[in-house]
Length: 109
Image (cartoon, rainbow, N blue to C red):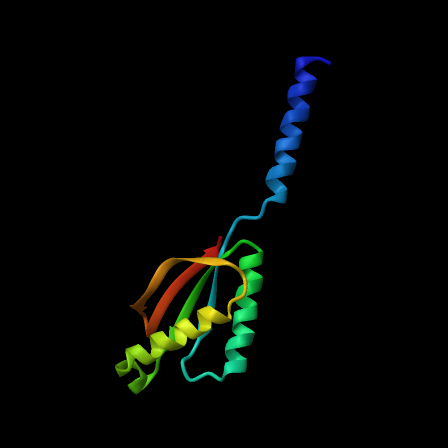
């Protein structure tokens, strides 16, 4: 086999490997603290799907009006949501105030 043919095959294989790999995206799951348990479970399943695909997931806890005054309650709801996520994950950004509530970021271990 000639070196040129070998190099051509190598380049061809590298191009194919680059096409197969998807770039990892940042996905967002938006929750509210007054949401029912079933609603949070549906969002947790969606977060599980995103994590299985290898994406980073941003959890955005949206607060309205007087809910902004009770931040401990909101953080408790976010912790409750984290327990519903079944895929092993690590928290890359701890919950912090941002926008209209709290923002946290997780990714698959």
